[in-house]
Image 1 (cartoon, rainbow, N blue to C red):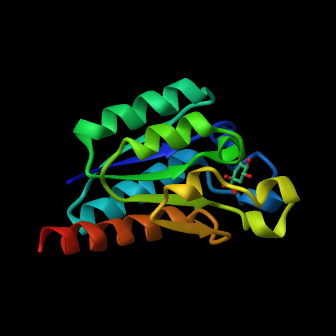
Image 2: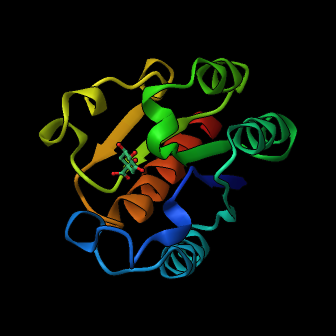
Length: 147
Ligand code: DQA
């Protein structure tokens, strides 16, 4: 089974962007950790990042036929994008929403997530470890569904 791991705007700057909030690991580090974890779990993984809402939506559409699950950190689009929610609603498999920071501990505009209306689970505030934990959950859900 293949999992798309999708990352929204500004996450390309991970490691140098507000490290007191997001930590010092880069997005390449996160992609590498996801590849290792996916391998142990018997999952294929495709890792993407874009600063453009439309690119994220196109990957969700692609996932409809190319992936069994989606792990997504929509970054700021979490709080704004009805279009991304609509795209995710057209995807059938498990969706796990990941936030590196604890969005509930931050500004009130970060407390609302459109994506959470679709996500099967949410991880926030566990740092970049949240991605590999999300992959573990995906493996569990896919194994359960295959039974
Ligand atoms: C984020 C939290 C969002 O509020 C913010 O806009 C981001 C990153 C996180 O991973 O903690 O860009 O999704």
